[in-house]
Length: 170
Image 1 (cartoon, rainbow, N blue to C red):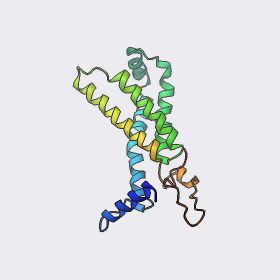
Image 2 (cartoon, rainbow, N blue to C red):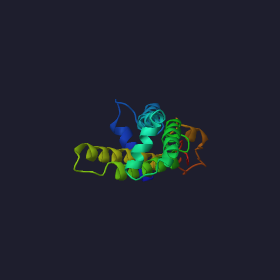
Image 3 (cartoon, one colour):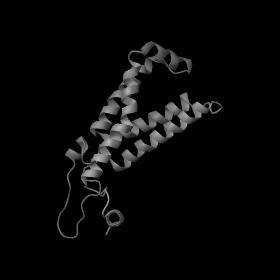
Image 4 (cartoon, rainbow, N blue to C red):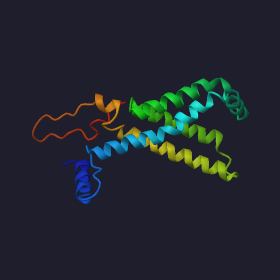
């Protein structure tokens, strides 16, 4: 028995009579989808908000030494990355890119720790990056485009089902 199977059985035994969040449950799948949507909503709204405020955003980027010419790439990463996370498409690589982007943004835009709001925003970005890193490790789950592509392998007696079935490789 693998460690993950043992953990799943332990979780299953301790949640009897309560919400079942074990692998393969509908509640777990819905929670994964909700988590992806909540994590990505910030980036979707932020990216879309940069479009009408394009000149101001480019000016702010220039004020901290970042070329405003990078703004179209920033908007594309935020909007398309958020949509990919919500849909669960290429989740692992998208989450890795967004985690890196979020860490870089924290270092560039929120490193003035003398300003309490900047320090809070810095740690907020670290927390968001942590959420994305969890997606890198665990994938999107079965209620995702990645999950639709994934196959569960089970070759007979003694074999185990892939732990992250539905998480996909994306």
